[in-house]
Image (cartoon, rainbow, N blue to C red):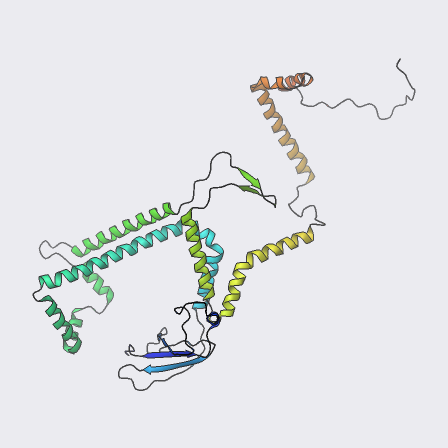
Length: 385
C-alpha cells in the first residue's frame, strides 16, 4: 500500500547517553524530550505491509500523527529485534582504527578512491547533459512544448486509461527494457546505435576510471626509498631506527580520515552509548595494554632465563662445523685481498710483514707456540751469569 502519508513522531523520557552532555549539535542530538521528533518509518526486509520505528532503551513513546490514504485502522506491536548493523559498524570501525596505517599506504585503496571519484564525475556529467538536453529540446522541437508537457502530466495524473496506455508501451521487466535499448537501430542506415553508444560509453568510462585510479595512486604514493648509507639511531630498546623521509601529507590526511571514520563507526555501533564508549576505549588502549603485559611477562622471566629462552640452540657439532667453515672462508678472503693489494702488507709492523707474506703465498695464518713437557724429571737449578 501507499505509505507516503504515514507520519510518526517519537518522544523520549531522557536524552541518550552522549546527548546528556549537551556538547553535540542539534543535528546529532535532537531534543526529543521536551518536544516530539519526526521519525521516518522503515520497511523491513520481506514485509512490505509493515513499517518499523526504532525506540531507544531509555524509554519513550511513538505517536501516529497521520495515516496513509485509504487506511483507517492500524495494528501496533512491540518487539525486540537484533540489529545486524551493530556488528558491521563495530567490525568496520575496529578495522579502520587498528589498520589505518596499512590502509593509508595501500595502493589498492588509492586506486579504488581515484576510480570511484572518476566514475562519480562521469555519472554527474551524464546526468547534467541529459537534464540540459531535455530542457533544451522539448520546448524547441515540440510546438508549445511547455503546454504539451503540462497537459500530458495532468492527463497521466488524473486519467487511469492514459496511465494504462503508457504502461503497455513499457516492458514489464528491467532486463527487457535494457535489451530493447541496446537493439535500437538508425532508421536511415540501420546502424546498431544502441550497441555503438553503449560500447562507446563503456570504453569512455573504463578509460576515465583507469586514468583516475592511476592518478590517485601517484598522488598518494610514498616517497622513494633512500639509496646508499641511511642515517640511523639506536632506540631505547636496542632497535635500529632509520631516518626515513617524512610521511606524504596526502597519506597523512587519508590516515586521519580513516581513523576518525573508525572512531565514529565504533561510537555509533551499538544502541547503548556506554557500551560503545567502552568498545572505543578498548580499541584505543589495546596496543598499550598488550605491550605492558608483554613487558611484565619478560621482566618476570628475565631473572632466570634459560639458555634457549631467546633463540633456539644448535648442537656442539654444528657449532664447531660452522666455526671451521666460516673461518676457512674468511681466511681465503683475506688471502685474496693480500694477493690483490700487496701494499696492504706494508701497513703492519716489520715482524708481522714476514708472516703476512708467508700467509699470502700459502703459509699457515697461525702457528701455536711450542709447549714444554708437562712432566719433567729434571728438577735442577741453573743460573746465568
